[in-house]
Image (cartoon, rainbow, N blue to C red):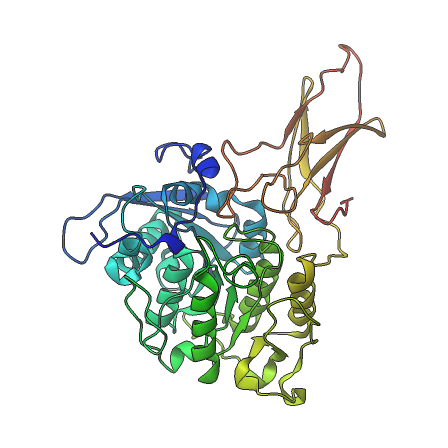
Length: 444
């Protein structure tokens, strides 16, 4: 076993205490599917057991891609991956692009070497691709094994997602790296991490580095102080060689994910819109550097220079960040200032409201821009209750499903259900359910 690398461990004592055992997870009934593989003793293969859970948008005829939500290192973060595919906000992104949403959960013991899975060359690449094939067969979507990937990774998951991008650039539509990046041969050595070779093909994949300001940017000491130097070196090497790469420093956080999803999902949406082919089997569409928007690297503490189209940028573009569109450029400015990415569109209205006795149930999809904060229940045109009574999220905006350290829902999953304890027997009532997104906007 190699030495554990502290900057990769993505959990706190509190977060770990809230985690269920590895064998406690939401049931995988259609449109959810799950496979589990035991640890291998064969050299070069994955030494940890792993679960892969996937959500397939109901009604989709043929998948166009797979969005992967990859947790970080440490036992707590690994367990948090068990609910990743059940996240309503990430499902909204997957549904829009006819993609599956896949969340791995590696069963890594607390003191084991994270590199044995977060470096995909240690067996997790092969296990992941086997999982795609087996889940494709289970779900009736064999194309799952061949369609492109959009990769999101936190901490050690960022190492994994970045490593997969460097190994398989022809399969990767875009990659978001939260607090973790792979090591390139050109970059300064990092203890216990083996470098990757950078290819011309990898330079064509849109990438976003997303460290917290307390990970070596504004706060230069402490457990995660090495995150920013690693990000800075990775970004510098990639950008100097012409990569489509940006940096969005979270101004509020350390290693926790905070409000990053409100920029990450929009950024992935823009990249998927630009890159996914209309028909399965066709190669990913290329993005030209000239199509992007450029801004000086911003790490906080000064004036933010507004991004401009590539042709209008006057500075050294090889040291500037790259963004895929005008709308993302505006959202980036809002995010790096205070993470308050604006939203002016209301969420979708709830559907299939049913009443059995005094219990209401309903269905709802999350708002792509701002997710779901909760629901308002009205009875006979008057306010009755909020569901949940108080939305929670210790790491960012309050959200309906609550959030763990690694940006996944807490267990048990909160149902869309309400019991009217004040309903009187024999009376008829009219109920309405209104969705509220995390920007405070209400649905019909």
